[in-house]
Amino acid sequence: MPRLIRHVAAVLVDQYVACNATSHAISFEPAVAREDVNQIEGANAGTAAGGTRLIYCSGPGWMIRVAIPVALLLVTFALLALLWIDAVTGRTPWPDLVITLLWISFAYLAFWRVAFDLEYAEGTLRCRGLIRTWRFPLSAVQRIRPALIDIGFQVIETQTQPATVLVCVSRRFGAFATALRRRDPSIDVRMGWVSRLWERIPWPSSFEEV
Image 1 (cartoon, helix red, strand yellow):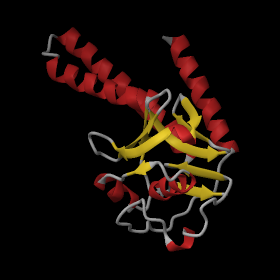
Image 2: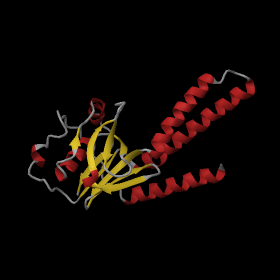
Image 3: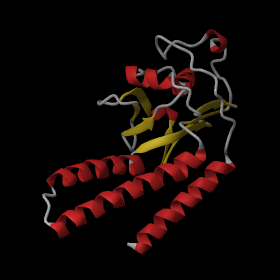
Image 4: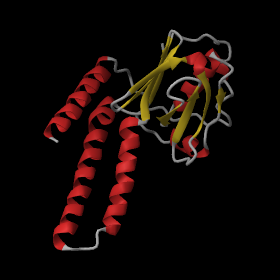
């Protein structure tokens, strides 16, 4: 267990340093309401090619690389300790066991299946999560759609592996998806209504086209 904790801590430190090395300015401008993310704003209508890089970050680097993983681990250890107390004291463990299993499932998704940063450059889309990073050509992306349970996550469907990547949605994600579609009009982009609500929250997420 100590070796596992040291390994996770080393990965988090490496990703935090990498995130700071490529940090970018964060805008606090209010989100622009849109009826459909497939519609391209007038200011961008004539720039089909746009910049050479697209960068979306769902929040500050310190929060994604440090605060969220630490919070997930602390809550997980607290729930496991609660189960141990139930076993020692002879209390009924089922309610705590159900909560713990649900939380561990959520933590698994957050650590291994959710992307918090997206970057497009030279025909390649990079999706970076807390521990894992996925890369695939933009031509392999089929659609960007809401998750089956629409709680503020979008799904990127691809023709390669992995077949799907969950993306954490914050303000300006719709602008990033629109910019991707400008580069490949075959991508079907649909935003869920919960994701639209998240986009209107003045959260320190960012989107850059450079």
